[in-house]
Structure formats: structure tokens, C-alpha cells
Length: 438
Length: 148
Image (cartoon, rainbow over the protein chains, first blue to last red):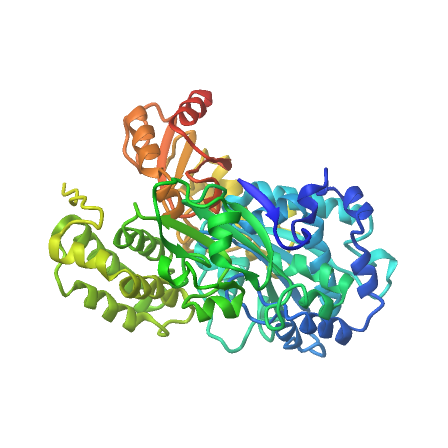
């Protein structure tokens, strides 16, 4: 697996290439915690303004502007305020946050400290998915180092007006807890059910107190922004999509891995076919790409080859999909898109928390129909039936999981009608494989 | 156990429930039995039903006995297209069990799980808390023979 930066100096990935970059000593020698010192000489408003200027958008998938999110926190509210790091990386296709926590845990701590200072918070939690136990162990070691060095705890770096402590918290296997309000329910010890918004977590989040929930990559970008200045950081990318972005790329490419690219990188075809080494098997053509984690629209090769798709929020929307988490899954012509969509639908059925009826029942029905199709019992009207169920789910639940389940199906039927027709009319896959009926 | 509770505000000890369920699960031999859950409810001053309510939501809590080595094979898209079905068939035929089952000697349980965030190193599996990535049939043989 490759880890590298293209078209820019490694910024988020910087410490990957420095020996022992995860230790406090090396991190400090490399300029670590200087941004925190700088931030502590600034006003809270000035820090938030830098983050706004940077055009940083949440790297967890939704892409909400981080500076704007921070500005929603009512700083005169007397309740304690919380900074929560969303390290519940569970989006199929996404595996970037793992490497940030493994190689650069102090950058995350520093980002959370700066957020804490800017928003008047004294406590932070890192909510990691249960399967990432080894990463939470790495974070615990780094937190201990920072505490012993006077960076975390009472009087941060000797500043008598600012105390901030940080704890890790483990999830236990639930994709839904990557949704920020479900994450907060889970952090409070309950089932991971999403909550009604508003009130948004910035007003009423953890323990009904003002809370900011940010993704790992978002928070590790904060020290970079403070160090360089918001505008300069933004200009690494484009005006609307600031900075650099980590892409996780997997599937049928020669060099899968985590790549750091400046926003606006041109173009998607070059990235897949050249930078990532092209197709895994030379004699197989590119068939489909899911560019931003499983929850975004699937693209066919025609939407990518020769289309000059730029890799940023706007470029992928223009190309008919979304950036999401930047978890890119590449499929060659051996993949049947009915089957790949069935696989993802099974994922959403398993991960639906069951709170909202359209999502709980809808994902179950979708899987039942896919099962029928894949065992050769499909009916010509099934494609329309799938779309009708998607219609009844999209936008009709508390959180976006129902949308995330509907979009792959809608786009798969739209972009790969042939794969579905084969199954529905001839009861074979696009590769001519007969269903395995048992 | 008290160190876990100390991470949260004094009146919010329920927040420690999930971390402590892992502790109980480990201490009770890999699954949540009634004595373990009853003990935890008392420790956190919760109703037993509160503890079960949370515990039954999360896929990492085992509600029945489990093998000493819990093999969790990722079945989501990137692993699927990179060879997961062959890995699963190989493991299952070698151990003589189907996904969801435990070997008679109680050594291995095989479970199919959803994405574990290792798509770039697919196919992969997790045994206990350890990740095994870029799997091949030979690698799997070695990993299984190293399980004591």
C-alpha cells in the first residue's frame, strides 16, 4: 500500500515520513505545538476567522464549513463546552484517519487544543471505532506524553487561563456512530440513535452542552492553518475547496493507498490511471468508480475518461457524484454492478440503527429484492421497485443513512442499466454467470 | 474500571458503559453473560435492562460464548472484489465450520463483518483486536497455525 503526497508537499502526511514522528520529542523538534502557542496569543474570534478564511470543510463526509460550525458555539453559554473528535471512520472505502492517528497523534491533540482554546472548552473526547483499539492505545500514549509535558491538563503550557484535558472513548461496532448526534448518544452510554436537529450539537450536544464534533483529518488540519494563515492554506487548493485532502483508494488499481492531493487536483483519470498505477490487471478495463466512500453516486468510466474531472467538492459534483470522505473504490470490468450494489445495500441494512421506519424497513426490503434478483428470481419490474423504495427512504429519516443507502442504488441503475437488465430479463450477471441457487 | 469512569463528569458515569462492557466481556471469557452484566449494572448504578439495551445495539458485544480466536472477515465491497470469497471459503473449509459458527474445541469462531477500514490492504480480517491485511491463502494458513 502506498502513502504519499502528489502535487504538494506532504502536509497532513508529513510525519509519516519522519522517523518516530508520533513521539512528542520528534513532533516538537519538527515544529509541533508552535501553532498552539501562536493560537494562544490570538483572540478567539481571530482563530475562528482564520479557520473560516481557510475554506476548510469537514473531512468526515458531509463537507460542512468548519469555521462556520465553530462560530455556532455560543461562547457566553455558562455550560461546559466539549470538543469531540469523530474517529469512527467506518465509511466503506475510507481508511485515511487510521494513518493520521498512527503516525501523527500529536497533530490531532494540538488541533483539539486549538479548538478548545478558540471555543472556550476544557474537555475533549476522541471517539474511535471499537475495531481501532490499537489506534486508541497509540492516542493514549500520546495523551499521556502531552499531559506529563504540561501540554494537556491544568494551565496548558503555563497559561493560567486555559485548562484542557483529553480522553479517548471506544465505540463498539456501529457505522451509525459516525453520524455526529448518534456518536454523542453513544458517548453518553446509550444506543447509537441519531437525534433530531435542531438543536444542533453546537448548541446542545454532549450532555446537552455546546459541543463541536469534527473528523480526525479536519482537526489535524487546524495546526497547519494556524501556522500558515487561513488564506495561504486555502490557496493550496481552490477558492471554494481549501487546502489539501487525503484520498483513500482501493479496489482494482496497482497502487492502492492513502494519497494527499491539493484540492482541485487535475484530473481524476490521471490520478487513477497514472498516479495509482492504472488497472490492477492490464487486460481489464475500468468499469466504475465510487469516488467518495460508499454513500456517494457511483460513476461509470465514461464520466471519468477524457472528462477532466477535478478532485475537489465542486469538480465531483459537476461530474455527477460527490467528494464525501474521499474513499475511492475502483472496479474493473469483472465486477457486476448489480452485485456490488447488493453488497453495499447489505452493509446499510446491517448498519441501519432501526430508529426511523423508512430506513429500517426500506433497507430490509431492498436486500430482499436484491437477493431475489441474484438467485435468478428477478422480475422485469424490480428495477423500478428498487427506485420506488429508495424514493420512500430518501430524505425521510432523522439522519442521512437512508439517503446513503438510496444513492448508490439510484446511481447504479442510472449509470449501469445494462447490468440490471441482464439480471432482470435473462437472469444472468453481466459477465454471463448464472445465479447460484441453493 | 474506576479509571474509565473518571474520564467523564461525576454525574455522567453512564458514559463509561461501553468501555466497561469491553472489560466485562474480556473478564467473562469473551462474551457478556448475566453475572457480568448484573455486576456492571450495580457498579454503574444502572438498571440491568439499561445495560442490555446498550449492549445489544453494538456488533462487537457477543451475547453467547465465542471461540478463543474470533476471526472476523471483512465482507464489504473492496474486500469482496479483491478476493474475500476465496479467503472465507478457505478458512471455513479448513476449520470445518460456516460463518457464525464455532469449532467443536472452542478454539475458533468465524464471523462475517462489515467494513473494517482496511480497503487499501484488502482482503483483510481481524482476529480479536489484531488486523491481518493483504491476505493470501498462504498467509491465512500461517496465521491460523500461529493461533495457539
